[in-house]
Length: 91
Image (cartoon, rainbow, N blue to C red; front, side):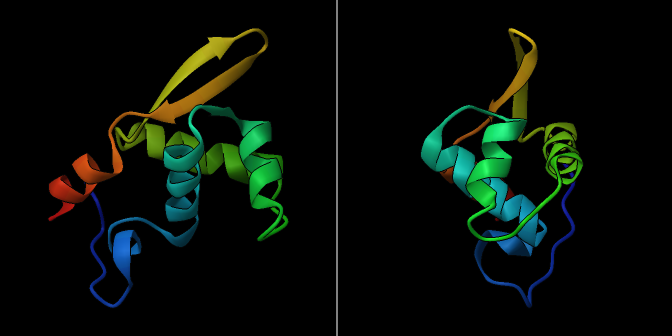
């Protein structure tokens, strides 16, 4: 697992991008979700295109932070590790 570390950012944003951090926080707090569900939840903060959210989820999966499973016609993303496990690996 590779992360770009930025000591000038706060919290998890030191290892993840700002949108990646928001997405991971949402999934850790709310559990598994589809791209559309993540997009709808983030819409309260920012109006993001479906493809932007899909790109963020794909990057997090590639980094090993998310699992993806097929449910019906859509993919559902869930955290591959807890918030504490992630914090321990980054430190």
